[in-house]
Image (cartoon, rainbow, N blue to C red; front, side, top):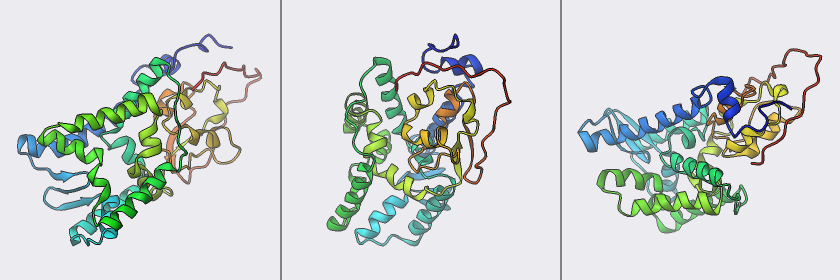
Length: 303
């Protein structure tokens, strides 16, 4: 047992990589989320109209239409055929996330993600129980329900309550009730269900998970033989059920579950550099140098 065994979560990675190295992808994600949010706010706030609209539908530089394909699908089911630019915009976004990785949207673009990440951080600091955990298929049923409601009412149902769109509009026209919506999501993840909103409720995440199920970008436990069972990766992963098949299985080390958000926190937090970003056709595991010394067991940390 090494002297690092009882270090708090993340301290081993900081000791091995330095603070920046142990938070690289977290910082990049926050920069990415802020970048996309600022793009949409530059026009209303400062009159610099690079992008007009919201993440549900926008026009970039007056030329490039982008449409949330989940919004587009609801519109079709509701009986409203969008203009050609809307269809083109939905196709562009659909192809992009299908190739790159569907739930990259959740971890690198969605402005609600910092709220749920903050709730998880505080949940862990307070040592709270993980709480109610709905079945993982719950968000898929919610997604189907949203589509059915759109068809029955003729409305784009999710946009009536979508916290992402509400947050965008709130930042432009005044937050008002939006603060209550954001606070409710934070408290839900903090007190009711750990990772509950993104992991079990949000139909947008469910939709992007489906379209990105065969995407190229993947996390791989390429150096899984170096794993010392510290459990830090499980503690930080918002969808930690995706780790075991790649880390402990005997087949591919790739994380192939569509639930993976490609957030990169498992890469950051691992002092042994077990994980890396790669593509779905890279199925090789890197074997560590042979050693005559038997590996010592590590005390696990509950997650």
